[in-house]
Image: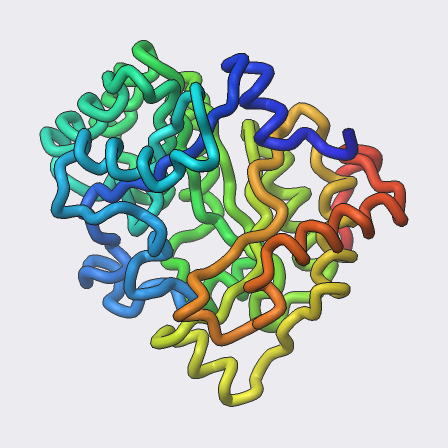
Length: 305
């Protein structure tokens, strides 16, 4: 096994096939509603990067049952992780958060709750709620850091600094909630060394998992306008894979790698178009990993200038 994949981790932990169900909390984001900005992160779609989630106007149990039907051909006699993906899913009234997350975690087919949010949307009362939920079933919190480079963070309008991220990780660690961090490979003006340093940075924090995501340029985003002005380079499959392979070698073996690429919604995808063929992409990545004979955690994490 070349890396500690999510599939293997879930099979070992739960003893069966486990599939993620994308649910919607119906919440927004402080980077969109005017608290911090109205523009959002430059890469984020109008759907808050949650185009595969069920409709937020349905109740939580209804969403779970509908999502189960959508994946019924892929899984039989398995269990599910409830994944609140789009926007910032702790950015809301605490009573509402308690209601939707409690209903979710108590569903008999749900074995874990995964909540996507921002590090600046984890006030004390939310940390307390997550601690309570974590005594019922495992709770994961997914933080979209995207990069450790502060210049890039400003460029993509992320809206918070690394010290905010570090405090969030410490707060979540204090209640034994697993932290999964998202990084994007291929952000504007980032070099291979920038990307590797981002991987090394997050791995120096106490995190349980990491998602490595290809940059997708989607329609009707600020990033699309930037891309169409020819102001930054889009990685080829070959370039992406070679950077990804190097990143894998710097991730300690105890950290679960939740994702090594991603497939954006095809109707919104502007670039790179090669990413739309997920099967071809994964086959190439696995073949290239074999050619390079890479293994997770085989390099130390000293930083690159």
